[in-house]
Length: 158
Image 1: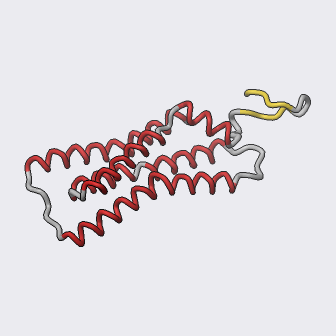
Image 2 (image 1 turned 180 degrees about the horizontal axis):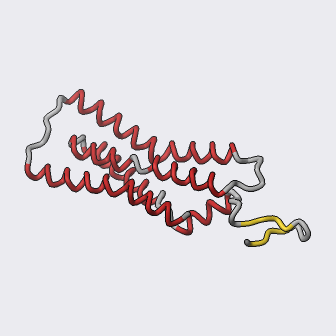
């Protein structure tokens, strides 16, 4: 599962980084886009709020919904956990795309910096490291990690 999640993470992040690099190069060649202040302020606030939703609120809500929906199960099937991790990674990695859009539109410094920080947070925190995946497998009692030995009534590693 870990290797597949790494591939998904890279497949989702690589286009955002490529887009961000292309925007950096284009900003050196072409003049900045001029937008009216009212439109720029509204777009900046919306991009910042969306970045906060996708980096912070959305993953927390999705994680708690997943935990709530599997609370009565003794074990969570590993396929369900993989789908959860895949969706969580995909949700969080929307934020780098929003940061690239914010950089392209040359939003005000506060909103641009906030969106970039949220993108860095999302790419760092939701990286599918082996330690984080193992922790989630233990927390959600994934079926391929532990099983109950009924004769001794304790957990044994498979």
